[in-house]
Image (tube, rainbow, N blue to C red):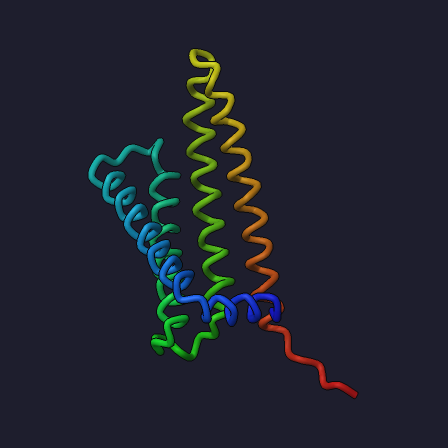
Length: 154
């Protein structure tokens, strides 16, 4: 967790990066809302992965926004450590990658017979699934490190 703490401490001192984090949070939040709204108003079961990806993006955007506010020294939910917010963000972002990967695979596999370039969509979908898995494993690792009690030094 010290790696994440060092990263967060350095990030906190770079205001332009803090602003980037806040804008990135907005991008995730509003793209997620866009897909949620679109899939609720024109619901079709084949787009369930898009709906779930949108939900993960919205919550990831909210968590990243909280982290950005905390980095600006605004005490919002100050009882949650910044390192935990980073780990939660990574887990939620991983969920978004996972469901976008499923959606890309679903869409590309359906059309690969007619459009050979859809092979690229299949490859991208597989990479999204892999990226989501790696992000999730890293996020769980960070949460596990945070949860482990420190051993007294003898």
